[in-house]
Length: 171
Image 1 (spheres, rainbow, N blue to C red):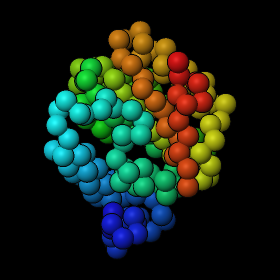
Image 2 (cartoon, rainbow, N blue to C red; image 1 turned 45 degrees about the vertical axis):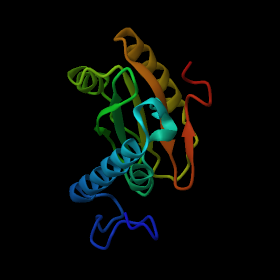
Image 3 (spheres, rainbow, N blue to C red; image 1 turned 120 degrees about the vertical axis):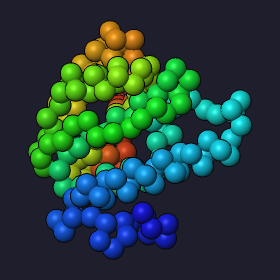
Image 4 (spheres, one colour; image 1 turned 135 degrees about the horizontal axis):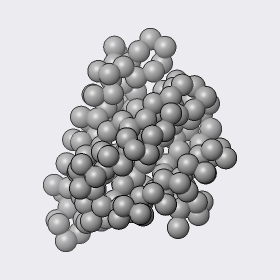
């Protein structure tokens, strides 16, 4: 993303406003660079555990303008150090096709103990739907049964982010 505008560089996205595989890869690389820089600048003793607000802004900016719903998972160890992050679900402009099996297979293969989920709302609203609330509760229960802490589930709108933990849908 261009530092002056927060927008992708020319040619970085699809013509319909969605993010191409190349644009997604570029946003992911930039997010990793931002995270690496923040880790390098803070001594280990001062590193904070992973929370919803520690997700790199570049990744959030990349998701808010998508025209289809997508979910990203950020996997971390017990100390909150990021192990991996990746796209775990895709949908259309009305919703996601969410597979618990797919999400948690990826988490377990990385030996994740903590995770943050984030998905966008193409409508631009960051308000959780009834389906978002039900899915978050189900994801949290399933994660807990596997020994994985669901730290947060973020809903990304055009100009706002809603934390499902802050709304008390994750306890």
